[in-house]
Image (cartoon, rainbow, N blue to C red; front, side, top):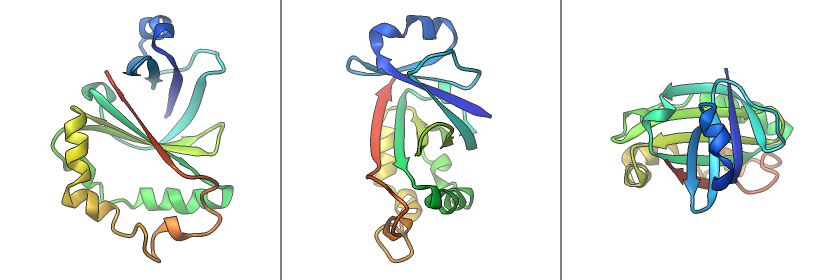
Length: 160
């Protein structure tokens, strides 16, 4: 399965909306996602869905955790996510998750959809979040492996 992501200005989203894309905004910036197919265009990023739970349209707040990886880090990263505990799915306000392998870049995306922003911030302070990230910063954490991350990860958020 594939997922397509478009980034641009909110004023440019009418055609995408008419073609079934889920439109998300942050100020005048916009993101659009689609699991059905992509129009031609240089603003569309393509991903293979490695894991998924829930329905994207059930959420109103989207979090894109963008994680650049070197070629040698991809297998280790994917292995970690294939063996994840899946506790996020049990959190109040959780709607969906997509683990996305890039098809034309080096940046993986962990997309989560939430009922609202407060559901996401509550998850960040939960025991489940602590458990999911317990190895971060330790010798077992992949964030301490050399040559895996060519640059820092970053988070972008949008709302319906």
